[in-house]
Length: 91
Image 1 (tube, rainbow, N blue to C red):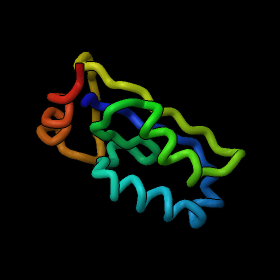
Image 2: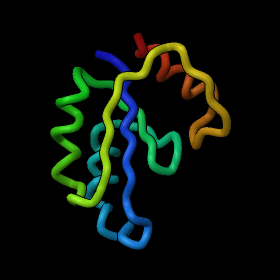
Image 3: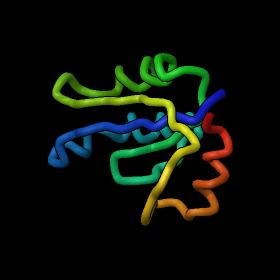
């Protein structure tokens, strides 16, 4: 298991169309760290991507990438101590 970043670009005017995506992210036990960035513990970027991609539209952008322990941050939507706990899963 490793820590992954999920990042997406969606058109804000279409945000009402993405409730299924956000529900899936919550169901997968991910945490929102910025407005369009989530973190999740998983087996592979491909497996995470394959669960989320069907919930996006062709015009959207989606990135799933492994996170390393080498991280610096400021003003995340979750507390610093909480993010440090997630980082324990990073390689």
